[in-house]
Image 1 (cartoon, rainbow, N blue to C red):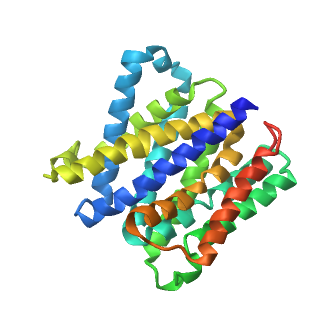
Image 2: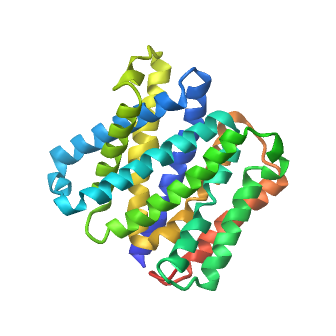
Length: 294
């Protein structure tokens, strides 16, 4: 039971950090940083930091057999797509809309579990998925968004981020049968960093001449918006499975709403408060289930 609660706590912390990172990314875009630059900065900084940390303090976690190289290559490429599509969506549409689109992932993960892995979706989990998606919809105020007037490239990118994030979650869970969560994240980030230093001029984004304030946000996104939350999310998946972790991660828009209320003075509407309560209720519902059930 304690392990399960720890899993939910890890994902809760990841959702909080992702919410803060999304806001920081929007400020960076307004400061002239492009999504292409930020994804190269983010993946390179996070990959270098995590590899060096493991090398000096947990070198045993860097052991890798040749037969697993293909798995990490594919996982890393998917992670690179996940990060870029989400950042591009944020740059084109409202952060709330981008979050809403990415958090269709729990539905995709549940479908994967049922159709591909032949697992039975329990009724409480079904209710939790429905509640989380609806709660997320209300929380971000999507009922006020005119979808047809939004940037179509941003919408498509947000949907692509949901697919990529779902795939990353289920394949990370598969990889944890043989590897530690931080091993999976480290090599996935290394591959993602290589991808974005090939698609873009190598380390070109580091030559942007950013101000000190922008560099502080860049470092925050790289370390506290990437390494730590993805690592915590992987630890959560290990303890409560990908389906439950993805549902719990819908706390991100709730966290974003609280941050906006505290620091920006934005007042939440009644429907947003109801949405936040609904998301919280789904998390409580999940914790009533026994570990291992889908």
